[in-house]
Amino acid sequence: MDRSEKVILTNMCMVYDENGYVLVQDRVDKEYTGITFPG
Image (tube, rainbow, N blue to C red; front, top):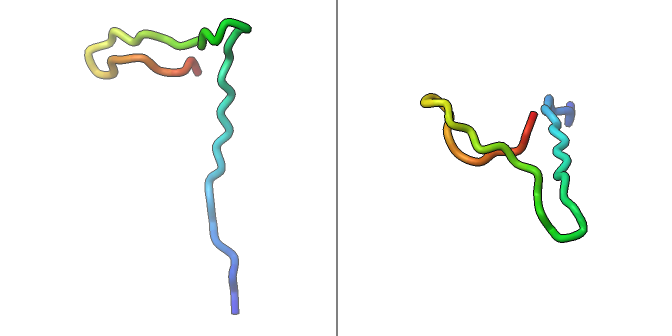
């Protein structure tokens, strides 16, 4: 019995400082708006 399965793995890294502030981007493009992680 073949138990293998194709998957896509994604790794995310959140950048923050000692005060708890998180690095994000505020997107203003009409196609894609809102706050997101950079990259």
